[in-house]
Structure formats: structure tokens, C-alpha cells
Image (cartoon, rainbow, N blue to C red):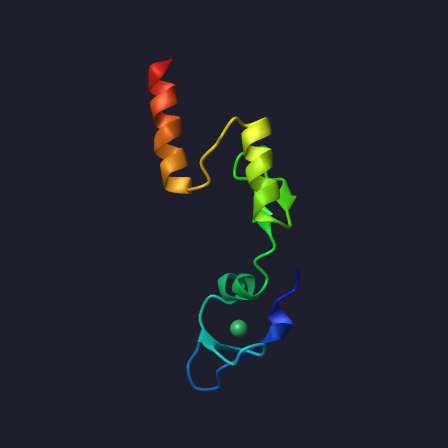
Length: 85
Ligand SMILES: [Zn+2]
Ligand SMILES: [Zn+2]
């Protein structure tokens, strides 16, 4: 998704951009742009993208056998299962 044209750079502060959608001053254009379009949920296992979080949850459960959507908890869970092997 193109986000470059949704921002205008600050004439005074290098690296600062203003979002044309909400007028907020941000530095990370990509991260901020995503907050306006949260419908992009990428599976961190295989990279497939779902437009809805519940679809991704179902995918994680069915395909990767992951029942937890909290990434930090998921990571510790994964580490535990590796050490169990
Ligand atoms: Zn914005
Ligand atoms: Zn996946």
C-alpha cells in the first residue's frame, strides 16, 4: 500500500512528516500509516496476510497450531516447546 503521498515532510525538522489523514506529526511514516489501516494482519510464520485479525487467529490455530495471538507469549511458548524436544 502506498503511503508516501499521504505525508508531507516538515520544512523545518528533517525526518518529521505530517500525516495528511489526521494531521499528526510522525517520524515513522509506515508505522503511522498502518494505524489508519489496521486491516493488514500478517502471519509471522509464513507471511500470509489477512484483512481481519480473527482470520489470522484461525489461520494460526489451524495451520501453525498456535492458540495465542500475543506475540511475546507466543515466542516464549515456542521456546518452551523447542526445549521440550
Ligand atoms: Zn495519521
Ligand atoms: Zn502462517
